[in-house]
Each structure stands twice: as C-alpha cells, then as structure tokens.
Image 1 (cartoon, rainbow, N blue to C red):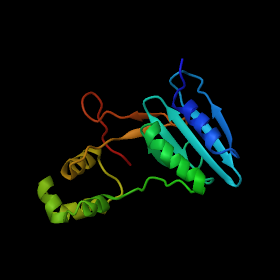
Image 2 (image 1 turned 90 degrees about the vertical axis):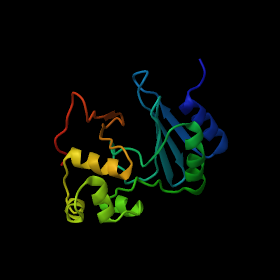
Image 3 (image 1 turned 45 degrees about the vertical axis):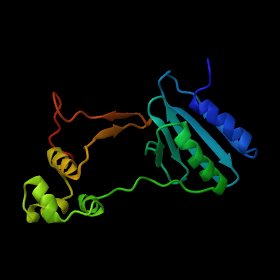
Image 4 (image 1 turned 180 degrees about the horizontal axis):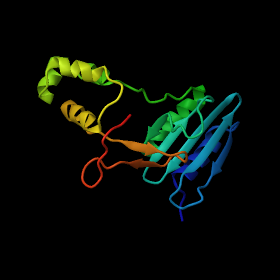
Length: 177
C-alpha cells in the first residue's frame, strides 16, 4: 500500500528541513485524524489530516486543545506551500476571521436598503437584525440566501472531527445562541 498524504508530507519535511524534529501520530481508527508536530528551534507547527477532510494547520503556542485549526486546506497540493512558508519563515498561522452580518453585507457592497429589498424587509429591520447578538437559524438562512451564499452550521469536536447539522428535512434547529 502507498503512502497517504501525511506520510508524504512527513517524508518531504524531513528532507527539506534537516534541523526539524517531525513526529507523526496515526489515528486509532482507519478513518481517524492523523496528527503531526514539526519542531524547529523556537518554533512549533501542528498539522492534522483526515481522509476527505483535508489538512488543518496551527503554529500558535496559545492555541488550545480542541480549538480547531487556524488554517484549513483541502488537499496536499494546497497545504504544502503554506506549510513550507510557515516553517521557512517561522510564521504564526492565521485563525479564521469572524465577521458580523454587517461586515458581510459591506464586503458585498450592499446597503441595508438593498439587502432589505432582497429579504422583503424594511431597512430598519435589517439594521435591527445586524445589531443582534443571537439569531434564529432561519434568519441566518434568509441572510445567507440574500447574500448568494449557503448557511452551514457544524459542530467541531475535540478530536477535530466535524458534523454538519442538517437544517432542513427531518431535523430543524430553532435557535442558535
């Protein structure tokens, strides 16, 4: 049997970074998460990989167990250049930026009035919704649709496995707080 993506990455990193200590931990179950730690003087990079899920990368020592990856890549070819850059320059990985509804609307160049038209609501209603701190999932779905996007709600477990929640059909979520 050939090498998987993590084994290929380990082989590459050991050849490219001769001063690195690279540890690779196999999952207990065949479809589990592989984890790798790359140690250079005064630098640590953690990499997780799972078949069908891709690579997760973290290089921040303040990152806590179970917090999820800062940077995520679909496959080896996407992950490798970033991993090499992080290691070569001993860079800090960048956590995903959280945004508010207002920021998404502004990034898309929409006014509250235009978004209101798409939602069938008044501008004042859009303003009130943007200032809220909790939402019904249906409200977020409406905004996502108005933005031309799809809403995805998922749970991320301490072992980095993810479960996307089904929002239509037999399962309904009433509220996200």
